[in-house]
Image (tube, rainbow, N blue to C red; front, side, top):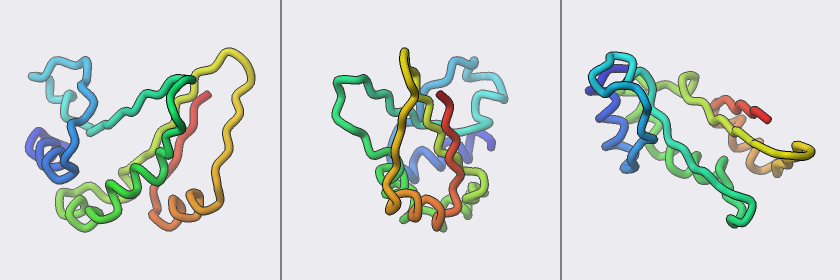
Length: 108
């Protein structure tokens, strides 16, 4: 991805990407587009699968025109914990994610 594509994705999705630590003049700075949602134990549940699919699904065709195909999209859940790592996902979200062709990565 180059800076033009990066900016086009930002405009298309109508949200600001997560700011990266790399120098904005570095060619690596625009190599990937990332959006982060951080939640704490006191926050209400954030349905990240449906929220992100709601954002992306209507724009898959336009993203593909920019060279961003579904196989290049990854939902990454990073779960930091002190005790046991326990998560559950409803079948509806898993089916929807599978039908979209988007990968899910979970790190505990």
